[in-house]
Length: 326
Image (cartoon, rainbow, N blue to C red):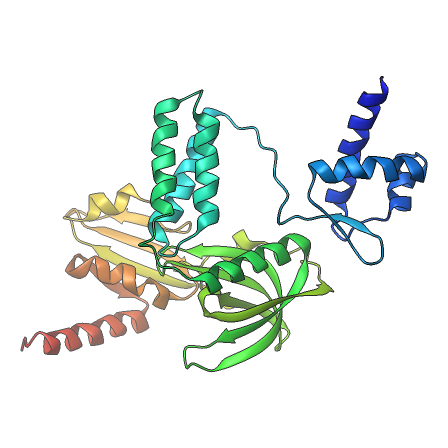
């Protein structure tokens, strides 16, 4: 192997080491792990920093700047389409301007230009639409999401000032475990360990008025599983209590549409003789289903739980008064 090839391989190994050690490594530690003299690493780091975004800390430790690091990704045409659909879904369900999503989609379009120019053009148009000025501009939301992304990637705690629905702002030390979009509310939520009260909690990112990245590290528990956490959630609401069985009756005119989509992972359906449909599911908090149930109007009847049924009855009574119906 030539000297140039040796250096190229060494640069790749340095990259692997720094990716595996987000807190950074000293030149001596890198040299020891690669079994070369420290002077070799000192020379190679000049070339390394021309290729990779790095940060040299005050104590001499070197780490990758993950916020500026460029991922290397090889995907097929069908995989590119899957990413396109995912980002388009984000674009149509979120009302805020997100230049990162637009840039990612534009890069995807550039990558497809030679392979599938027609698809590439439409992906770039989608990127342009996502960057349009008529989308809601919210610099604080964007910065908050950027800081949370970095904190989650580096497993560093953040200090947040969160505004409750009442308007009161409270300060917390927070360890992000997972970031989850919420299509119904066109929002983003972050789940993690909050102190106080020293328990798992959820923040709506849009309500975080201020955020600071701290040097304090945290470890996500091995048994933390977002899929299991949201197993019974209709959207974002989860609970440590037993899920509640929900039974809805859909009229024949909407039954085919209901069957076209799997609305919840626990759902089960029963076909009735008149063409109507009984829909069953185990839900963490049925109140979260209210907007969806309302959307079906009189074509959907809540059979259980009784509390949810009474909530709908009361709402129907209020609507008759609003519209002047005796």
